Amino acid sequence: MRQERNNIFLGVDWLLVILYVVLVGFGWMNIYAASISNESLPLINLSTKYGKQLLFICLSIPLIIFALFFNSKFYERFASILYLISLVFLIGLFFFGKKINGATSWYDFGGIGLQPSEFVKAFTALAVAKLLSDRNYNFKLVKNQIKAFLIILFPAFLIALQPDMGSVLIYMAFFFVFNREGLTVYYILLGFITVVLFICVIYFGKFWVLGVSYGLISAYFIYVIYRNPQFLRFNWQKIIGVFLIVGLFIFSANYAYNHVLSVHQKDRFDILLGLKTDNKGIGYNSHQSELTISSGGFFGKGFLQGDRTQGHFVPEQHTDYIFSTVGEEWGFLGSSLVIILFIVMLLRIIYLSETHTNKFGRIYGYGVASILFFHILVNIGMVIGLFPTVGVPLPFFSYGGSSLWGFTILLFIFIRLDAHKKYDL
Image (tube, rainbow, N blue to C red; front, side, top):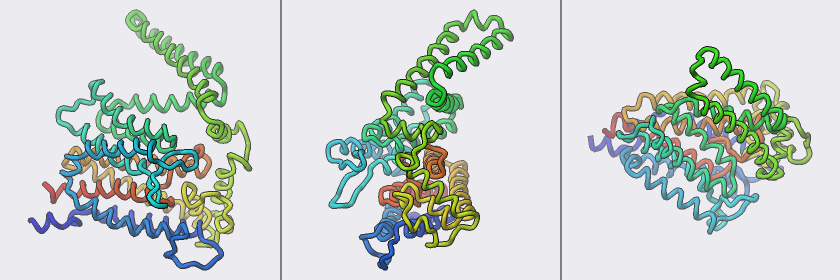
């Protein structure tokens, strides 16, 4: 029994490991295609993007072993401490961080950059799992809901100050976790309505949205009062409150769009909504990405045969726009296969989470699935022009050591917790 417990690979879900290896390997192939030059260079060459990524992949192996080395009780016991340490690293950026592309999101260690926000997601998921798995925790109580919200608010706030709004968006994924653990779906619905109202304010203007919103709300309350005349008598304060909150939000959204968002952020929304066309300026990346994907057709042009990829038409194609390489060289068929692999991984994580004997492991598993889902959704939506351009990498595909290592730790902590079900009891 002692030998079994000393074997860190015992109980590991090999399907998730295989999916990880396939996605990382295929991701590297696309980074190679997007960054290769006409000059003949060896694969292991740290002056190239693909050479550095290969080094990052090799360094992921000791990270995997490290994540599997600790048993599940360690992660459960020290979840809060790991979370607090990660917040300290985020705060440290404002004193020791390096500004790149207008954001102070990196530590520079002798030319090697490290982005703490990529790792904080895993430790936030652990902290959320720790809180929600407490025996005395009741999610129906408002004070307990506030505690859960604060856990995701602290890192999101610190990341927003860098500023890195793309990474902030990912923390919305935790509302799926909260919903699974008993939080009413109305919170998610409220978030969806908020986004729709914000977009409508940008597209149609505040007064048009205000009029339509008040009309729909009035029609709803008239119907409710018609069905139950006593509703008005006991709920008139709530009715007035709804009108005030909706009106306040619409005017606040209009103010935020015109006075809080930076010019390039406003331009991205305008281009996305068709209010402005700028294929040579702020919209250049998205436009070139869409052209590159569409040029691949159904079967693609073949590995290293993408003329737009080889011509480097898409800036930074090896990072956030890596999926455009997949679209051109592997076509609709290859792109669909990548998405299917991601879906299989997500479904596998959810399935294993639901079979967990430990509530902590189940909640963390849903955190992993939600974070990966948001990254995949936002990144691919951005690359094909459905979402505005934000700095959200595609898991296991996009170039970067911090991104790859962050997702590796996130996934393999779950794999370790899953192995707990049989061998760490």
